[in-house]
Length: 585
Image (cartoon, rainbow, N blue to C red; front, side, top):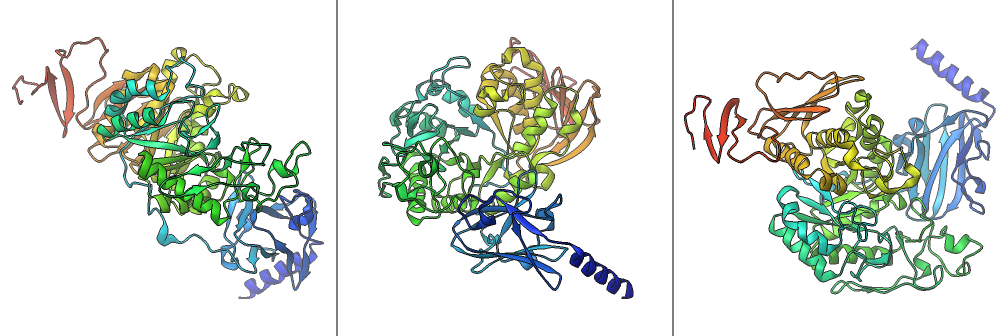
């Protein structure tokens, strides 16, 4: 007890000796938040009383905020010091620097305190934490064995490098796609410019990729194979039809209503209201943004009931009238995850994935919590690990990375590249393959990366150029995954992770897989396993019936070894034999 009292006395003396504490955050000119100063280390001084430092920001408007407590000189205290026990505002860790982030759904006074041990965040009204009873109610199938295909790449509505992927072209591949994949991610379907991420009208399905008749034909063919169509939903921003924010197209979601937004439904911090070159600066606007601003278009204010009603109508219409089965939500850093959850609960998609583009696991984890786990998220932290490996010597980077490291494989859509990372010239050399890479020259690396993707838990999303270039190999890998029954929540035992090798055992619903990668990998089959695939940089061994990798030109008459329930059989011309030659079927 004496030691505890001495410690508390020392703590009080230490805090009292501190000259001052400050709050630094994402303030903007004219705002009461952080006195309008942006990340100034000594910008907003706290007041001390009985060893507790505090500051109150009056009448903060609806919006999204970030901050840290500082000593005014060099010390920055972030989310690691935040305590939910003394806070009534829900806060999350933001970015690699672990800023304390919170959103307000209604204007109120906000008080921040620091007692030398923990940071507390109190709002006059408060902001409820997500309700655990609503976690994972929709859009997140459990132990899901499905595999997704991204059925486009940047400008593939006009390019033919890896085939054109307009709806009419996709129709030619629909039967083959449906045979191997369970989910197909379509490009944005709304009328807009370029690839379609600056949508002018959600309900006008005459896009760069084709018309509604062509779209429905592809979806119908996929559905015949029990393959589901995933729509690309762009609800962070919207493109005006006149001026910066003078007028917008009407969205008619029959039978769910018709909606026409105005400048009043655009976030207050949008360029339309602050840039000197804008012709809409004097127009009425909405509340502060609840996420990151997008400069390319007008940011929708999701705090407004009218915008929420429009987005609910849009998602219901896409599911029930157009025929999609789920959503890929674009740029979800642009608004609070709570709205994504709201729209999924309203429309009840089979599947949902959020593009929350952050490389650190904590940020993506917090986004999922903000969305009440009613969506999956692209595993950008895992993508970073794959990019770091890049077919080189960094195999240790593949051990227990991404959302799997937090026990969240069920909510992870894993991937190697997508339309953005593969296309952007400013990322040349930084992503897995870089800009305009000739995939034919990267066969070993691409197949090894896809083997890692398809043997691990989560929901793997195969990139169209990879599938198009290496169809036979990737389809065989998918076949192995499905034969073993690897699913989104499969257990993984990481066995070896060093400079030159990585190995793991993955448990599926129907068996197990051993994946070995790298130049130093063992090439002998583990006891009770048989080799199912041999690649330049990897080998796969299974305990279940899986055909050995064979060259494409081999005849169906060629015998193949398979293992089932620990026994090895020979299959030839559709018949199965024991090793002694006895025909079983």
